[in-house]
Image (cartoon, rainbow, N blue to C red; front, side, top):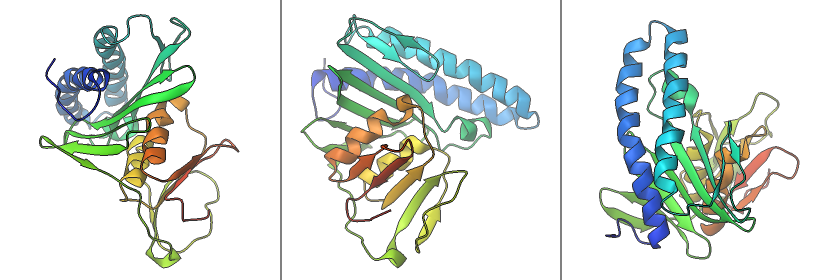
Length: 236
C-alpha cells in the first residue's frame, strides 16, 4: 500500500481505517446538528453512530492483525491474547451537541505495551500519532511534523486542561475544559496544553494519549486512578 504518513505499514493501515470510518462520522455529525431541538433524539442518534463506528473500523482493523483482541468502553474481545486494538470515541457529549471537538482514539497494544497510537479529529481532519521509540507527530494537510511537550514552568504561564468534578489542584494560569480527554492528551504532547488532570477515565480513551505524551517527552500517570499528564516540568 502507499504510505499516507511517516511510519510503519501497520500505522498507515490503521490510519486508513480511521479515514474510512471518519467519512461516515462526518455525515453523522451533519445529521446530529439538525437534531439540536431534541437532546434525547441527538443522544440516541450518536449512540447508534458510535456503534457503527466500532463495526466499521473493526472490519478494516481485522486486515491489520486478524487475530487481535479488542477493547472499547463497551466491548472486550480476547483475541489471541497477544495483540489488542484499543478504541474509543472521545468527546461524545460534544458530538451530541453539534460541537466538532471530538476524536477517535485508537491504539495497538502487543504483549501489554502500546506500540502504535492515533488520535484523529474527523471534522478538521487532524491526526496526532506515534509509535513506541519513534517519536510523536501531527499530520494535517498532507504534512507531518514532530511534536514535543512545552517547556513552560512558571505557574502564571501555564494552561491546564481539566476533566474533573471534584477539587482541582490549586495553581495559577489558565484552566480549560474541552470535553474531549483524548484531544487534551494529544494537546499536552503537542505543547498546546502544559498539563491535563482528569477524574478516572476508561482506559480505551487514554491508551493512545499515554503513548503520545511519553514519546513527546512528557509524563503520564494514573497511579491514584486520576489521570495526570504534564510536560514533565509542571508539578501537580
